[in-house]
Image 1 (cartoon, chains in turn green, brown, red, cyan):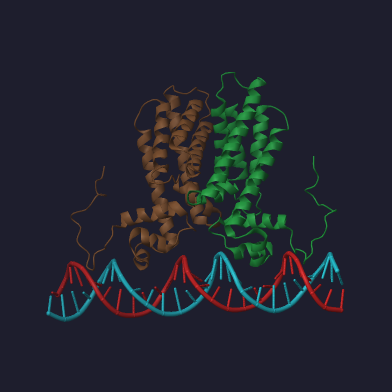
Image 2 (cartoon, rainbow over the protein chains, first blue to last red):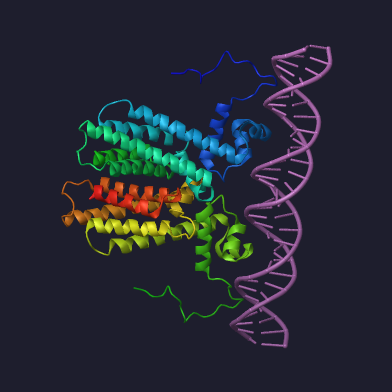
Length: 208
Length: 208
DNA sequence: CCTTTTTTGTTCCTGAGCGCATAAAAATCT
DNA sequence: AGATTTTTATGCGCTCAGGAACAAAAAAGG
């Protein structure tokens, strides 16, 4: 377990003027801006205002608008899968695990203070996907990983006797993914956290 | 059954210069443009090019960009629900009916020639929803109708003995909607028509 | 203490997007 | 045929968006 991501005190200071803003934080704030208004609906000035960095600094740090978005998108997938990994690895029954997964997802989908924004991918990247091969590739790759994660866990559950031996693992995995997708969409469409939690419970009860 | 939508030959001709383009067709072409590149990603010049109308004519016919989009969105919901109604009303087993629904949906999601664009709502309106109360309202209303349609049909199916008497109708309806949502998303993310059809079949087999 | 290096901050330029004002065209009515 | 009405077509002006150039600042190195 490397602890090197935090802050490396042994780093030798670079030569020029120090950065005024932490790149990690700045990218998070940029992502939050895209999350609200989408790729096309967000200007570099919006990101500049959100991060406190001016445009030349943004450009130097992350590249042009498209590069910033792609970095934010990739970062989101990593964050999402890390959150799912924790939920998968905490043990308990299959139903409990699935509800942990959905609760973790909902806590991301409702993480914005004033208004739910749903999933970054579903809410912003899907729109751009047809006209942007790179974004489409990253999105599709993430969905494959999502399906595979569910399927792998259902396989474990079946081995543990929590599912019937003839259960269609792929079918269950697709429904589990579909449930996550519908949560992502409905959150952005204005559904309440509570309603979506109940929706997830009903889905889990059918799947298990 | 009114046949008045086609063309009213008894119409008295209006007084000025006749319209060069059919409003119905123009709105369809405008919607197709939004469908490709989303609300923020589409300019009035794009719509002008797609319809052959120049901007002042567009404005006179449909209002500003936002109004055009809202009209296109409402029109899409009507079209979608009309397509679903036909699929619901064609009889057959529950499984067959559900597959007709999903096939009808996929034929819309893949209706674009060169590249699949998925669902207009999921692919374009969801992005705008948090920042646009009117769009959010139309989207949420459509989802409620979708859920209600499924639930009503499951109720009929249960009465007809196609479902167990203790089946949770709302849960099944939500899963049916979720399946449609995942189809919409995945189509725009680049999945093939065939793969999605197989996905739908697996979902139907679990639900029934 | 001056030079070098890297980042920040300001400014300009070009193009796109949208609304609007005005002219031209094509029809009906008298 | 001329007047009226409704639409199409062209062009102007304002604002915003994105890239790049240039000057100022803040650090380390010699």
